[in-house]
Length: 178
Image (cartoon, rainbow, N blue to C red; front, top):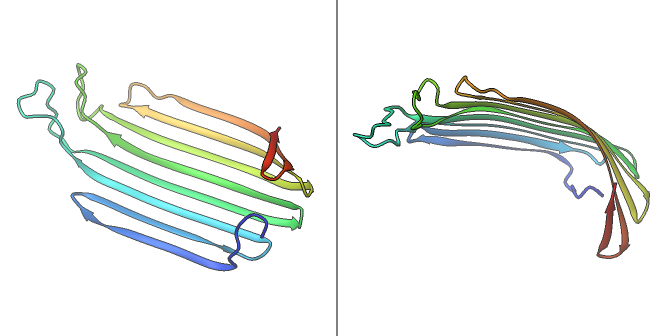
């Protein structure tokens, strides 16, 4: 296929890491399709109970286990309408919590963490105007939410549209514009 994916059918990968020192990871991926339609989905869960990094006798001692947890999902679906036109959708989602020790006044295990969540999604169309000219239009949305210890929680949202063209002048020279 022109998108570089040559295998036909369904494949899947699953892995699981044994919990060593309070750490565990689980991931799975499923991908496949046929000559016109392709899909890929993957999920990941990564956790650690953490450990205490402050020294005994330190004025900033926080006796706790600073852990980390993350869950992620990625998805991609594309369909070739004609030999020169492909449409698709893409999704990414990740969320988690990171804990740490801090020397700032008033820091406790209850307020030394970051919760985070990121979500992005896009729709795209790829076409080939002629053999030397490829073009892609992509419309997307992104959301970023963070919470630093409960006191500071920025949230960002954005929408985007992009158009990128690649014109092959002479192999291997390509001109990108959009």
